[in-house]
Length: 382
Image 1: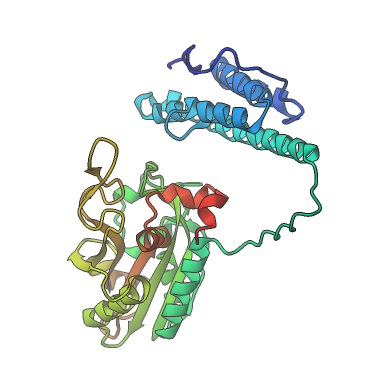
Image 2 (image 1 turned 30 degrees about the vertical axis):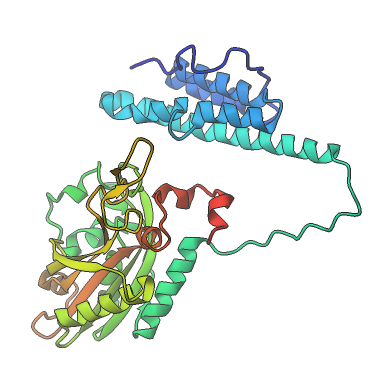
């Protein structure tokens, strides 16, 4: 395993340090836990905590936070990026340690920032002639607003809401949705398994099965919720995100009904001028299956964005000019049989969409990670 500590030049040796215990009362226990994993990781945490605690002002604190945890060149960030090159066992130990360090240093940075801000406030002279400050008023997260807008849209189309558990059984998440036993999604590197039979759901589609087992057709339902996948995090992928699935089962439901529903959705969310396309694709639980793409709003469909040194490939659409918005199709006959429906009597369509991607395309957001960073400067824009 490579050394966990940074190069000597990574941290300015002139930076003042201080005891972080007042900011993190369990500092000693943290050191002991990391030492049991790897003494080098414990040393990295100790140095980082002391540097953050020793910051004399907010500017110095920010400089140290960037050096340690910065998104592109932070020491801990670089360590996490190197994990895929390590052997499996070493990757587990180092990954756990680095994630603990990242969380604990973030807590210390936040605590030190609060101390510095309060100290600055007490030193300010109050000018009673100045107008008062308008109190800050919060508002709903952009994903919550998109979710409610979609639920209102589908409610107007006759759909009701059905919520299913986030911790799901393999039977509902895969088997009854016609996933074969050797499907790649059932591997541990794609899905978070809690036991051999229990997992964090990878999509909201298990709700279809539960709803059809409980009710008889006709059904017209939407299934909102959070889902989890062991994804490699990048500009357009996260290991947790939000979905809304839709299901319509009745007699004589056709692909034309599906296309009309998706067109109504696209026009309502992106406007009548939005460019979309439907292309054939395979999903185990629908046949035939299709994918709806929307023109990338970050690059305008060109696949290139302006940057330092000239145009570069768009990181969101990977240079294609299109973003996969949702998957859809006619419900597979095997899914109907698994829930006790007669596929000779009923047909149906289903679709599933990610809220984050819808919001990214609607507002031109270049990074899916921004939704979970809780940066007020970002959230205030919506």
